[in-house]
Image (cartoon, rainbow, N blue to C red; front, side):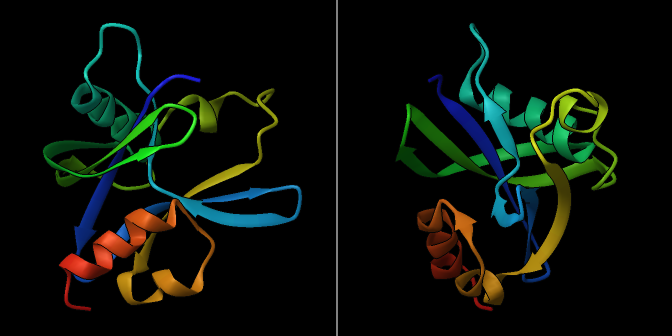
Length: 132
């Protein structure tokens, strides 16, 4: 599997996540996806944030690197412009994709310990650097 890059966007003691619903299962992931050939992890993070969330971001620093079916990079980022929930990636536009529902949500950092979030290591890192 190819490497992946994701955005970790924090604001007002909340984090942006993608709520995934598939086959009666609900879990949360960080907005992101596969890194294209010739693309840096930072570039992929920006592209994926725009596709999945509808926002242009400033990538700040790598919060975590997780090895799981390749390397997954999780970058702290700030929103420069756009509105969460206006993404136009395949997740929202390809009706034949049949990979469940994707819903961008703001979730309180204090609730990360009580939900099925993947990977949990990134949620724990967020809680360790914030005062929630």
